[in-house]
Image 1 (cartoon, rainbow, N blue to C red):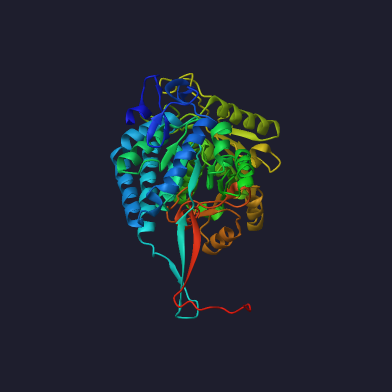
Image 2 (image 1 turned 90 degrees about the vertical axis):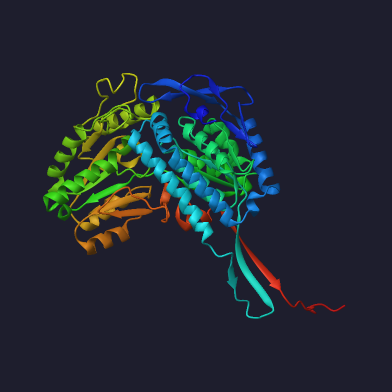
Length: 509
């Protein structure tokens, strides 16, 4: 079955998984999957719609209400998650290359993603296996046994983005399964292939029939129906602010649980003292490059706003631009390539529009700002765009306020700590940010004042499965990873048992 997700032939693949079976779309519709490195189709998947979604939800509902998985002991659920992690390790190379080709990232980034996916499954397996069966509540009398227990939510609709297809799916699927839920996942219609492959691994690991469902298709059909479906108990969405708002609105009439991980416009604040030595300077520049240009900047936590102390600005930006211009662009599987293409022609056009508006509003182009020349490792039809550094930016610019989701770094400057904090917090998002300084007191002060869900000090981009991930403001609601990530997929029940019931004479009679 794995061949379905990695085929190089343009035969339509049955990629809708319902009640343990792979199916074509009810309508028979299909969609070509394009390789962003050359713009050519390399796979064809089923294009599901509302009818396919209803069938998938019906199967997941039946598996939850009548199947064994919600009542399976936590140790057995954990064991299955560990088996899935083992299978991911076994298939690391195949899945990493597939992620590279589907999403455009480098092969090494794809392999690292698979490592992180396996880590997520292992973490949630260990978390549920180590938990106590319930929290005893003292009722003040020996005649009452009172306990708070956790139960699965039910049927979970999991809607994932195109930039980290399998990683983001794992952040939802692993805790949903660990908690005993059933689910229907809708991967991005642009990058569905590794999620299809993951369903095969879940089946191979022994997941009961009907627990896992998958519908490939568009957000405005499949995603919208999942969010509104009355038999869905929870919807978890990762993506853009506009789509996330629509998901919340669709879910509201049924008052289902909603978790939203949305956009980010993330500041990377560099104080001059962090660059007082050659090693400190080189490290801060290197991490600023990583923050902005990993996966061509198509990362919700990308450090796309460099906020640098004014005396350091010219030296720092000059070196940053020099090194950004040297980044090797090309097909992710090609030797020596450091950065792949954007995911689609539409995404590249969006990035070009932001750069054009920034230049019109007074930004100074230090490097990039255009499509690169074709090369053997960089086909003419690929969606490539040069890493771009825009200097002398200010808060009124669209490119500074809005999420670009591309290889574009803006530069702002500050003179005081208060000004640095004010600039960093001057965003409607609040996902992540970083502060660079050798002053431990300043590091703690600034980190404490930043209104962002994750703050790195003298680093950028690492995350821990044990730590919650989420944002403030319009970056979303709810948390992924960590104990709070597991809690999203649970309901809490209080069980009060009277061990010596007696009549209560409230009324005459």
